[in-house]
Image (cartoon, rainbow, N blue to C red; front, side, top):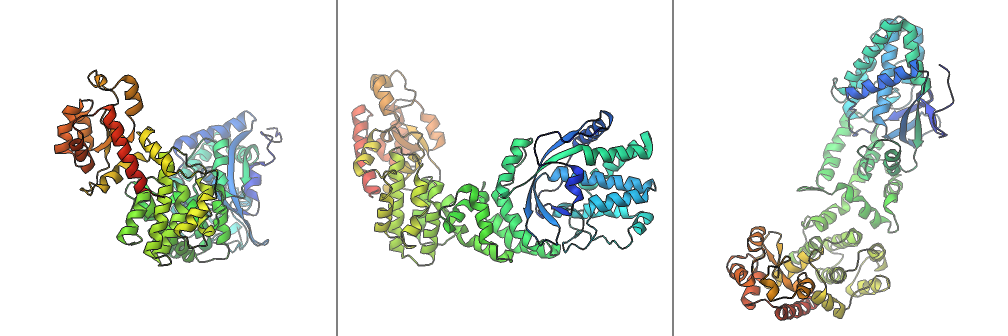
Length: 579
């Protein structure tokens, strides 16, 4: 086989020999997903190896994304594998199978050279193992078993002389995909021996080491790894900021014995992680951006992980980091889900639940999380917190009703807590928000006009408006999220069009005044019926007081009465969201 330089023009393309022959250790994060290459992938790799041999070709394996960790110059280079775990592990298994095959062929010296150059570091590394691959928790016992199988050859073991292998802490099962694929690789090597003897095995390992290549990309920011990987390889499940945070925390105890790691995981990490699972929602990965903004209001989303790493650089204790992370967790969950893990008073709890129900944009979370903790810790009195929450809610509701996009709110809220001196008041919040001239705060007249004339059906804020109006009537408070009923139907019958012209129908049907809450079943049952046929069901069967009162107050439904109700609702809304 005649070797050319490389398959790509990328200066970081490297053959497998250079990738694994240096003084380097590739670490799969402890809690990373287990190795899982299926037989079909191995079959394809076997075919690729044979094509390289028989067609004198080259083969490019794609990109390996790693993150180099700084270490003492005397220590090995440590690379966290961000993307490429499956290929790196498979290559190590094939090299291990080659060494085992050479041992079986009594080519002990050749096996020894490959073993010491590519599979282990021949000195004390100060790490948990001197293997060049540190697999994840689930695969460690299997990887140990691979090396135990190689060292079961007594002649080979004796040839290593002073070298002593330092196995991985044996976590996980001893049987599984990793062990099975090693055995499959060994069978492939045996088949090659039967076809061409020792020379064929040499062709195989030469093909793998010298004629197969990857682009090794060492990223400064691990959050960019999945983006690069998606561009260069087939899309796989990305590693999130949450995954990277977990790996960063547990890297501090990578040298500890598994029971220590497991204890911290069980007692600290898992309760923290599982608390984000609220019903069908998992809020874990959504937490870190608002949490990061609390500590640095100028952060961009792509900078969160690096900022957290810098914040924790002098903290060696994972428990302390996890406890820090939990500081704003309950506040975040309450705003996201309408819960009350903060144990606020009934009034404060209701105000925070409003932000959940109105679908508050993520940009306001850092400010509200700070406010929640301040109210919990009595830094702000109940009255002070209430006034601030009412101001912020009014600002958001008025903007949403008037159709202003949430674009720009990040600029308003990212520094609002700091700009209010870490202890906001109603007046200071109004003052600071009002400074942002490009982010309008609708006036009472603008707000009332939008309530009366802007089509609100389908707007994100509408369900909340309807619920709040129903609550204002002091009726029962059903837990059901209402279906929104068009009194004047979206698809009117001919009889409806004798009351409303086509132009009136198009202009009025989606106004707030034409919308009432119903249960799903009742909404379907009344459908496009005339008002006289719907009215009796509204009065007798609706669980919502606003719908019952609507039918009692309006014996018929005409354009004039719809506009009358629009005027009434605009006055109610302006009084409800007064700021």
